[in-house]
Amino acid sequence: MQNRPPLSGSSRDRLRSVVASLADWRPERDSPLPIYVQIAGYFRAKIASGDWPEGMKLPPQRELAHQLGVNRSTVVAALGQLAALGLIEGRQGGGTRVAGKERTQEPAGSWNDYVEEGIHYPNLPTVQAINRLEFRPELLRLGTGEPAPELLPGEQMRSILADLTREVLPLAYEEPLGSLRLRRAVSKELGRTGIQAGPSSILILSGALQGIQLISLGLLPKGAAVLLEKPSYLYSIHSFQSAGVKLHGLPMDERGLVTEGLEARAARTKAALLYTIPSFHNPTGILMDAERRRELMEKTAALGLPVLEDGAYQDLWLDTPPPLPLKALDRNGQVLHLGTLSKSASPGLRIGWVAGPEQVIRRLADIKMQTDYGASSLSQLAAAKWLEDGCHERHTDALRLTLRQRRDLMLELLERHFAGLAEWSKPSGGFYVWLRLSKPLPLPKLFRTALAEGLLLNTGDLYDRSDARHLRLSYAYASPSGLEQGIAKLAELVRRMGRLS
Image 1 (cartoon, rainbow, N blue to C red):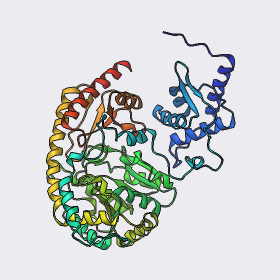
Image 2: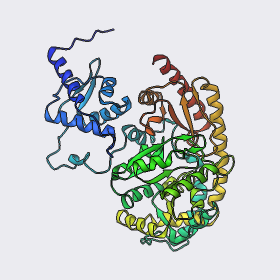
Image 3: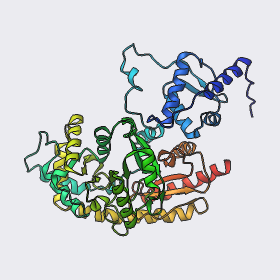
């Protein structure tokens, strides 16, 4: 093994100066800006000012994490941003060093000057990588939150589109709430789940995620607090945080979000709303039972706390239908309910909806008109006919059968390869198995190691920054043979890293 050269006196002094400067600064826990973004910003300022000159070595990641009082994964995310800007670089056997000033080859006034300046936070580096890598066909996607192409209704949708060519096509804008024909079809579809919402109480969205963005921009004051399950899908995106809204996680058990202590937490945070995925939660797959749903509605009603219910997965039950949605229990206009066709029929249609009190829906429609002037008229027409003709019900029945088979295969594979390495529960719907590793591992390293082996993972730290034990495994995308190959390979990687840690 090659010996590393000792640090020179000046190098030691510079390293000490880094440690000293970090002793006087900490990221703000209450800031709506993610902690890794705060750290990256602080480091950028130090490099730009010349306090940390080119060639200066940074302390190891573990030491940085200790000095800043954060998890190592947070430091990794911050350093990833700096590396992407060309401000730091890793050198073989030499750690991480300042590479120089920020890359500014463009003339003054270039658009590139604004890349990091917008109000919407960038995705986590791992999420950005996943979004790019999902389009590489050679990778086995073990965490993807969408159905595989062969599970989508290609033939049925082709027939729908062929039928539409014999109708008058809507080439103009739709009204602010969206196509009346589609809202009537959605209203009928919601009625099948117990939700009573007329067309005037429904806004058509360009995907359900847009509903979260509209609510954060149009209904919540800056600095507002949102309660939600932790872990949660919302921690992997920045829709609320970019609007200056703070997220406060609540614990879960096998029955869903824990309501005990909700009153105290809502009072302490001055919560503006509660966001929940009661049916087949993302990423845990947990189904909130009927009694817990009633408790949650009673407590939030007593608190006057509005609820945002994400029903993206509620149609994808695999054993028995889930309990009534929270919106079906709502008698006070307390719940906004999000729905989508993306998880079952077609992510590419970009059709979702939000149902709630008419005044709130009109407010959200006004914000939507200011952002995109309405979802695609052609997509809305296709979605309306899809629902009207009963295609959705027939397709979801067939999809459930396939997903049930793939879920059972994944559980069998986990028993075969992960016994003693991890724990898991049998999901009763949705896409995900929430795998809990028997011992903590550096999840960013596991992500990179798996990628080098041709596996694309969704690690638990995307949904809870402090997580070092979980993986979100999806049985909805990889083929049965891909699952067999991927789960076996993943188990070997976990076993190997466990021996090294």
